[in-house]
Amino acid sequence: MVCSRNVSRHFSCFMRILALPMIEAIKLWNEPNNMSHWDFGIDKDWSIFSRMVRLAGVAVRAENPLLTRVLGGMSPIDVAFLRRMSDLGALDEVDVVAVHGFPLDWNHWQIHEWPERIAEVRAASRHPVWVTEVGVSTFGAEEVQEFGLRRTAELLLGQVDRVFWYSLYDLPKAWPATTRHREAEGSSYYRHFYMGLLTEDGTPKRALRHLADYTPQLGICQWFHFEDPRLEDAVAWLKKLGVKKLRTGLSWADSHRPNAEAWFDRQMSVLDDFDVTLTYCFTPGSRGINDHHTSPPQQIEEFAEFCARMTRRYAK
Image 1 (cartoon, rainbow, N blue to C red):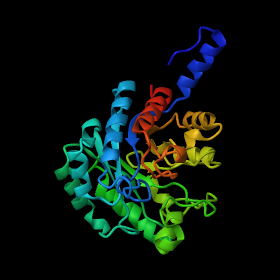
Image 2: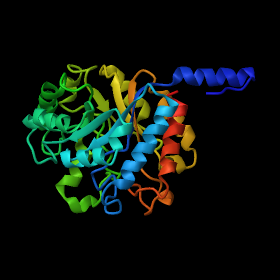
Image 3: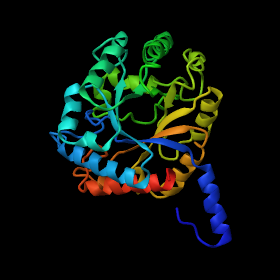
Image 4: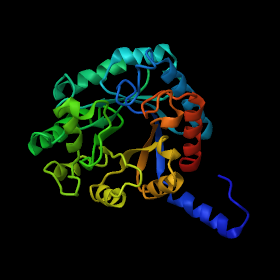
């Protein structure tokens, strides 16, 4: 970072450096084999995605070669997709492959099969495996999430280097969940709104009382929406619960909003007590082949530039 010779601006720049979180990893995209996050109707063989990841991985490494670069978490876990990424060279510019799993809500396998799922991914890749989203909804009963948290911790902690529980807060019902068909998905859609350990108004659920049994080894994945009013309260809860590892994201699409830089600075400045895995994803509608955040971009270089710029600003 280059600061002005002007003393006051130099001090301001220095203070912003002090306030930055510890970025330990950069995750490139989110669930690229999920139609709700990457439109493989356009990019039918993921060739655009693989080129974009390679370029972004090079850009991140150029800014900070010490960062761990993570391939966006597969959801569902699909070894054939991982092999496709290897064949296309996407794994050449990442250091970790990530998976997401929700066996009590969406996946077609049981929670007890986690060791088998991890073993399959390890066999198909030369990279370490992280679980960057795992969670259980309270759609049916809070007791289901309570069991799921404890059983997940038993099965995964110590088996992979990073596990991030999704999530701290329920998704507010006034906000849309990031899915392709929304209400037409029936109960599968509505489960998205019950994944938190806290309700949307901050009321603790049954499983919350167990989280501190597993922190700081167990991390939390909490997405913050643009100008999210929950930001400071979330940070207070995470500290109270002993969370040290946090996964969150910066949206390329949000970077095209007015005052985006101010929001990004605010978000990142309050995360200075956490080791952060920072996800870059979501295409600005105006820059996509289609006007949608899941669309492959018209120019993959623009995503790489966003990754470089955010890494330079927050992970230098």
